[in-house]
Length: 399
Image (cartoon, rainbow, N blue to C red; front, side, top):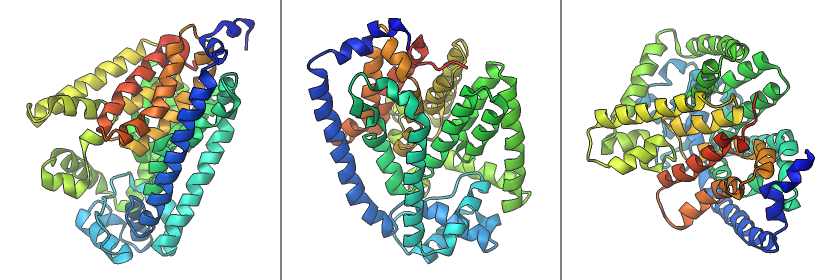
């Protein structure tokens, strides 16, 4: 760090006598709460109450020659019940079908064993991400050395992702590797790695769009090349007419927000900490669905256009992508650990302690909302606050 960094808000905060005792209490509580949630949630998931069911079932269906039925909800529902039993809801497989290939090896095992193996993989990926981001997180060290580990040990979305057996850590790993490649000036490789996360395209496409609008053409070229390969691979898995089936499938999931549709597809905007969740909650049932959808789309476009006026930044792009994503739950917030940690040095050197506070609030908010039994769409507010801190120049890692 430069000599001027010592005058940053982070270093002034570190000198405060109250900071470390308060941090110890707050983050200690977060750690034990997350541990308790994991201990209570994993046994239930092992019994079949998890989102991992649809990923596991997708791998089995492709392995046994039923790939063309991946977007047939009745078929996936039937396979889930046959493989795992009638254990609550049967979440649909709504990702690009190439992702099912990842789960083919796990489909050779019984569900409980497959879930345990995937849980182990998630923990390994979390450790791998920590190793890659450790040098960025070290900038928080002057506040208090243990605080470097806090984002990785106390961020509640990690617990949700682990319990549900979600693919959040696969996406996070792809984003972190893409970020590291970009930091090393390997833009084509960065774009290619970014495209690997297209199984959750609602996050990856906004990032790619921002790089295109920032005229980072090597990133776009790498992204497009890999995206093309993955598209053909997906068509091989589900059949060459599946693009039409998949489009209709996604549209029907978005349109059917009646109680039947909500129960069938598990799409609950009030649990989404993004623009969709915020706007849906604020408008309630007072506006028609078409007006609501148009309002969300307009707000998303305006946020992207606002971001294009900022300096090109991977951290900014990830934060924006989460807010404009059309489908995002608490476990998806795991990707926000990247901008939080990558912004450490800039936050510490900034002149405003509120920029550091935005990071702390981002970590605390999911647990606070859960304990207060408040709707998770309220989480969009601290995320927007954090985005403002990043966009203010204090947290951008420019490229």
